[in-house]
Amino acid sequence: MGPCDWTVRKAKQLLLWSPLKIIRMTHFMSSSTCSLSDHPVGKDPEAMRTGQRQNKGMRTRLGCLSHKSDSCSDFTAILPDKPNRALKRLSTEEATRWADSFDVLLSHKYGVAAFRAFLKTEFSEENLEFWLACEEFKKTRSTAKLVSKAHRIFEEFVDVQAPREVNIDFQTREATRKNMQEPSLTCFDQAQGKVHSLMEKDSYPRFLRSKMYLDLLSQSQRRLS
Image (cartoon, rainbow, N blue to C red; front, side):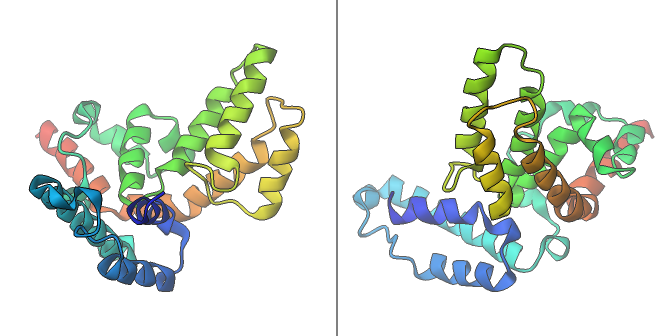
């Protein structure tokens, strides 16, 4: 894993870091040893320009996070070029109901799509993906598939240094690891509950305050007028 890969991976974990850690990471990005002149692609002008744009984009994201999401609310600059078409069919009533509770948001497919897009701006979409994977896992009926799915979810989201590691405490992680000895439909319940609580108390309120959500409400209202 090169310096660039390490930097990107660490950036994905920024949501629950303290402001001091975020500031330090921002400084690292500006003075990183991941310089284009030392990198193999540095000799390619187009690759150099691409790398410069990526580094600039990452520094913008880190700067936004260091000032907290609710005060840096213009997420449109870092959203995908083509937003989910399904969101264009969203009604004002549906979007308004998302503010009723976090579970209402999660029960609505467009709500999940919008929340996922928001979490991507905070480099924390793995929390939602893990929760959704657990919900799908609970529908498993085949014992053989259950075991393989359990280990796949654990290795992807729960294990230390997992590719999409979620932020849970040591006790919960170890309890889930122990459950992997004899996987069952409830083996992820504790970890899933922790992640659900984290999103509900942290990411969900910021989503409701975000420009992204307010714009969705505004756009749906304009379609009715």
